Image (cartoon, rainbow, N blue to C red; front, side):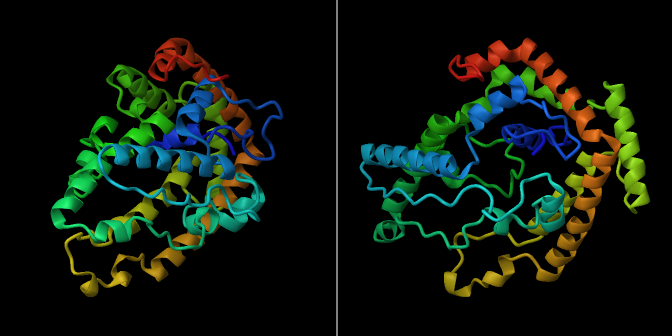
Length: 328
């Protein structure tokens, strides 16, 4: 799995760096591809996506929530963790086999990361037995300001409360995942520069720019019109997100007996169409990255950028996470 933080949306750039603990991309990647200091820092604050670590972090978070709720006079039964990591029989990410079977993993998220079991909240009966006033107090303790947060009015999370205002859930997320770094005003310059640098990564690196042109030409021969791999991948994410955005907003005050579950599910025909597109695009993308040497050029440019950003902001990033270094 290669590091691909050059996506046009910062949140996706961050997600890619959080998942940066794997080898370089494609079979044509250099054998000595390494995780840069910035990628290591994001791994540290973002938590692990490996199965056992993923579940351990969830258990730790749930225990913190339970202790916090008890301090405020409520019972809270920690939920069992959801299964983490990829499906056991799935090929390694960013291989030809993965691209052919799962594309980019976008429309296959349930197959790859879902447990296949419906999640059950062990606290439902406890909360259901409360009065409306008690329930309001319970959710205020559990979620803080998030209990009344209007996602529809602020879909990008611009005005989302900080972890300190998110009740016991916020406390747990902060202690387990260092969530405050995302909104830390002291890091604003870092986030801004990081986004600018990754958006202009190819422009600042002649070797990468040349590889990207070759990749684009290769993709044109396969019938696709994209300037770079990030744009190709992002096109699938954008269409997948559009299918979700088209669904009706959930009304928490609606009568459960009058809710049609099918109304909140993506149209199967539209999903199948996008999946077919993904399974055509991703293998072509992979083959063109291999044949043009794009991944090698990207890994070199990315490592140089990570080191440059770390030299400039490393001390601030360490301070924001308690002073520990990425190697710890």
